[in-house]
Amino acid sequence: MNRTLPVTKNDYIDVVFEDLTHDGAGVAKIDGYPLFIPNGLPGEKAKVKVIKVNKSYGIGKLIELYEKSPYRVEIAKSDAHKYGGCQLEHISYEGQLKYKENQVRQVLTRIGKLEDVKIHPILGMDNPWHYRNKAQVPVGEKDGKLVAGFFKPRSHEIVDTNESLIQLPEVNEAVQMVKDICSELGISAYHEESHKGVIRHIMARYGKQTGELMVVLITRTTDISHKNKLVEEIVARLPKVKSIVHNVNSKRTNVILGEKTNLLWGNEVIYDYIGNVKFAISALSFYQVNPVQTKVLYDKALEYANLSGEETVIDAYCGIGTISLFLAQKARKVFGVEVVPEAIEDAKRNAALNGMTNADFAVGEAEVVIPKWYKEGNAADVLVVDPPRKGCDEALLQTIIEMKPKKVVYVSCNPATLARDLRILEDGGYKTLEVQPVDMFPQTTHVECCALLKKI
Image (cartoon, rainbow, N blue to C red):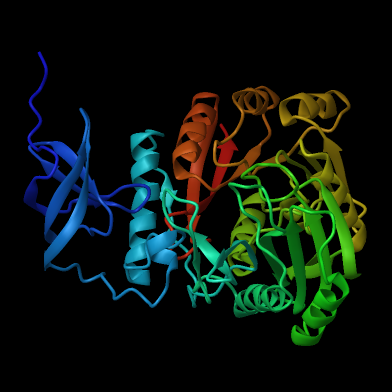
């Protein structure tokens, strides 16, 4: 027998918001039936319009607020909330931290069944604005001029945005300046429908500690008209620029970067530091976008590893070696493994850049490479994982359980998959001792964690 839903499409109803979803929408329940309403906050009373219903939940639109949350703030003059990026901009920073810490506690209990783990108060930022060191912004045309900004939801229309409140000022300035120069020189924007035009995206990367700026021009064409003048103007108007790179993406695709990259001016890389470790960053390098909070997170990983200088450490998702090299400052030996060959090349280069000879890196799947190291006599005293949002590969978790390192440090960008993986490791003979949430991306719903497990 089909259950009769308590609401229908286009109903106007009064609700009280009880919670937030993982993507920051308010949750209200009508006779147990959940409605998800963007921009609603727990404790608020409101009138909403039901705009979509299905068997298990509905979607609503906020019409009028009767009672506001003490955590609600006026949205700064920014398109980022409306068009993507800043889902929590309408919540005070205190409220954001509370929401994220609660999210971690809830998923560890609900998914991980971890009742007695010590969860520390979340570590936030002193200034939760203007923290991102990288932007890659789509370019279009409107009224004969170039525009660069956000895509409107469910469309390919670009909204011109002069400033993103979560990007570093140097990154905002670089994107806007390059857009203006291209417009002045008559360089056309790429048109998706016709697959014509030139410039697709403008990327800017900035070394917060070094003050070095990289500009990447991503085009459909292998050549750019007025290229020499374009470079000359960028250098003249952006004194911090150290590298200008041209990336060609000639395919009909939503992927931003193409396979061919040429240096137009300056150095192939810029440099930045996380703590005392120096990193070379190319146009294609993966590098954490919030270096301030990255140091906070990695300091916690180093604290949990508690290295005396005698340990062998394995980093199972090492990327360009960021955590590996942080740990190599204190470990006897660090082994890093990663499936992306270019990332391993970056990791080796970064080790050499810092004069670190106690870090070795290999290309491959962790669950294949780590047992090989184990057979060669390189057993891990401490094993570190920093997987993508989908969490650890199941085969890797089984490898960890079989190899029995004394300690596992799990760095996570997704509390739900962290909770799932901790449960598997606990069932395999490990005990989760503590978890430290870190706010890496203020104004968004994302939250990072560092967890410490010991073999029992």
